[in-house]
Picture 1 (tube, rainbow, N blue to C red):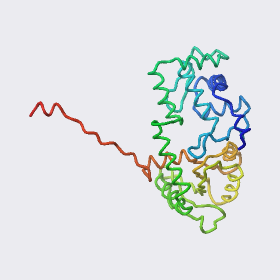
Picture 2 (picture 1 turned 180 degrees about the vertical axis):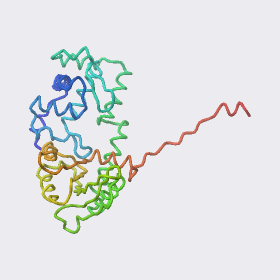
Picture 3 (picture 1 turned 135 degrees about the horizontal axis):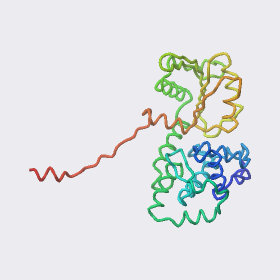
Picture 4 (picture 1 turned 90 degrees about the horizontal axis):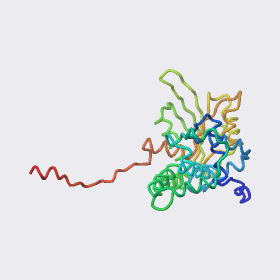
Length: 292
């Protein structure tokens, strides 16, 4: 990506009103993904601009997602929107009919909030992907995992990790076939739903730090033709918007996508190479001493 394209990504201040109008369009509430899609459509942001990475060495977050995160947090601090969960945002009733707000006033109001509110915002930013300094723990383990997966694991080891992951989430008869020259596919498996419905799935796994293009997804679709009910494409990187659009075209077999962020979440949740350790704390039990 050239620096010129990066400069085309809207700043958070320019996304204040588009975020609000997107929420209005969505009926007053929306997920992070829905808001982003609507903003892209409203501002007619090109795929090339939407796919610019914020810092591909550390995360799969795009620059647009980063700026949208900042816009949402300023809007929340200023009292215009709220988040009912990490992923769902709601516009407050009194702002649903207002077409435009002064973005500068919103930012000034947000910055004037109390220290307690700033601490809450800081925590929200950490959850959303912006981290710095001592608040870097979440980003740190993701970055470390990314380095291990992309630089330390061999291709065959990554395929075995994918095989183990698929087994853990319910696949059966998982077979790695990439080394046998099976049309460019890395493996296949059988997914059963409630022990009754079965789907034959072929998968591709790529150790990328960048963005998987639509062409690579089309190549995968060509390789899976006649071999499975659906496909699964896993990467340590991210997928371009065109790649995501390619997976849901009418009249073709569906392809599910797992990017680096979702892969990290799954490995963490399943305890596959990522451990959540509890710090041991020593506590003096005053009640016990009173009963001696």
